Image 1 (cartoon, helix red, strand yellow):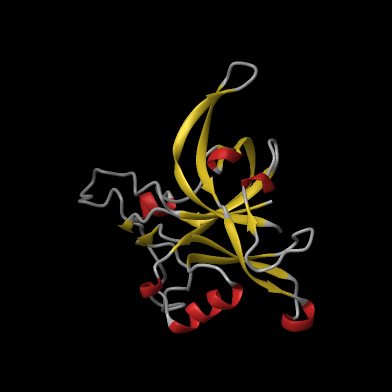
Image 2: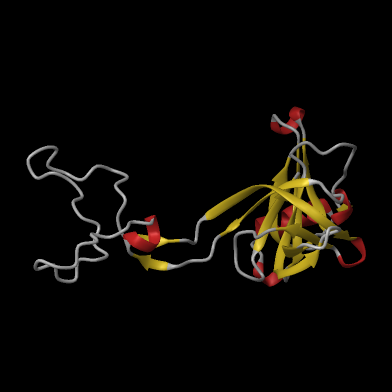
Length: 205
């Protein structure tokens, strides 16, 4: 689906027409520059490669510099491909936040906040052993049995245990666009989206 790259600015709230206080997220969207046009004839599928945010040449590899020079654009920090764009685009064209309109519904993908190494209560919502008497010591937040000792004599893959939590790509679907501010390249989305302030997100129709 067509979409753009953006940067999460933060959260705020707005009042709806019926007077309700609605939490929302503010995203700086684009402007994104077309760095490559992929077609069925040359690449086997139709798509646009878009670049977002300027980057110094010294931070690019030689192949990247050649790629941007061929497109006739300045080096970009982030690249992503999107399908389903209507109309004809050429390398160097700019696509702005006006791609979206109010009351559109979008899917937003981003890297969630990292929580570090966490136990099963926080990571998976375990209730803990519960029983704190009759000799129980320091067992309230323990996971309990993770496998039998005779059969299968191993721990199955995917068993919910303690481990790294967060810092993964998360996609939130069907978020409503409350407001589009083209002069500031800003999109106001109803609800929350994954990631910390300043993180890069992908917004798709």
